[in-house]
Amino acid sequence: MREIVTLQIGGAGNAIGDAFWHVISHEHGVDYASGRFGGTSALQLERINVFFNATASKRFYARTIIIDTEASTIQRLNTSSQLYRPENFVAGSESAGNNFARGYHTDGAEILDQVLDNTRREVESVDSLQGFQLLHSIGGGTGSGLTSLIMEALVEQYPDNLLCNYVTIPSPNMSQVVVEPYNALLSIPALVNNSHLTFCLDNEALFQICNRNLKIQMSGYEHINHIVALTMSGITTCLRFPGQLNAGLRKIYVNMVPFPRLHFLIPGFAPLVTCKQQQFSKGTVSELVQQIFSSNNLLCAIDLRKGKLLTAAGIFRGRMSPREVDQLMTGVRNKNLHNFVDWIPNNIKTAICDIPPRGLKMSATFIGNTTAIQSLFQRLLDGSSIMLRRKAHLHWYTGEGMEEQEFIDAQEELQAIIDDYRGSGDFGDRHGGADDDEDAAAGPQCEYCPD
Image (cartoon, rainbow, N blue to C red):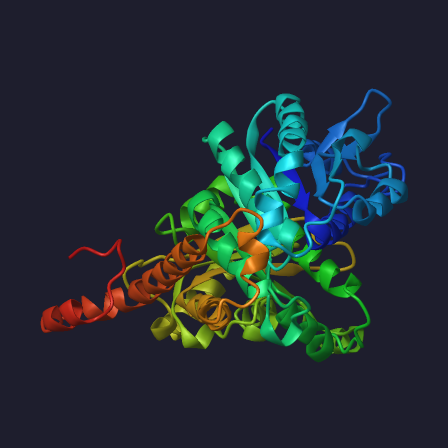
């Protein structure tokens, strides 16, 4: 069995994590409140050990570490469900106060050893560790600073295992914290150098899905957390259930990441429609394929038309023909060749799991590695540059042990990623014909492209 250890960090990470455990516990027939199995199929138990541990009393608990610098935010999870092991709650004495420096250097550093001890205990209890799944936001102090610290330690202690991050990225129209641009900027080096797969989430895109697709008047984060949980469930479905074409975490990594640094992925989900709209749906695979390639169904505010897809994957759930799925996915590429890079000939991967999500006959999850993500990084760079130019709020960070040079280094790292994605999209154009040598010398170049 290829098990995964989950770490949910900070307020946003724990909210998304709780929604995720709600969804997959139902799929596996485990009661969320008691942790007892009440399912009806042997398939629900076949690979349940990927995310759950079993106890001697025939109860299951989530293999997750619940982490926050402030105890009050995670106390609710401790009382709401017996799915969480009490020893796996790790809390500090004081909030990181939306400050990366406090999460990384002071408050977060105080609880790091406890986090690593709990993680080690869970790792030693499994047969064959596949990797780690980290859920967090990079807008707050704990989700950015403490997560960066934890990632560095995990890479050092478990160099052969994958780190998969689900990251909520700040969006200017949904900002609630003034120093979000700084926290996001300082998180980038750890994500670039230590993460193997980074799934980018955006509150603005999620709220738009609720308002535009689902016609829900938003009052909190419950609905958007559920959408994220459904998408995470789709991405991990082939780890948890048998299917016609499987896609493990390592397979996703190998197929989706052409170069180590270019591992920032955009997830999407379909169907995302109201119950009334569902009545008029044909319920075909063709409809699902059309929807997952629509920017309206992406969990990050990215327009796929403004970049080129390096790689893409579709993970389908429900009874369907593999041949039909392959033909439709290949057809999308053939009809939109200008939206795909030409230096990866077969850059679409498909996986099929026979078991649909609860309440649906079939669904599809999209994963895209696109050069259009450079617009998101450019937004982060511009937001932090404006503040850093005037050294606004900088004293809160330098007062906790940071230096101004760390901000400059992070900006250079962020600019390098933007250049890498831009260069990877231009590479095929610059090397496509006999007269392109001069253009190749003049244009922006990715560090992985040959001279």
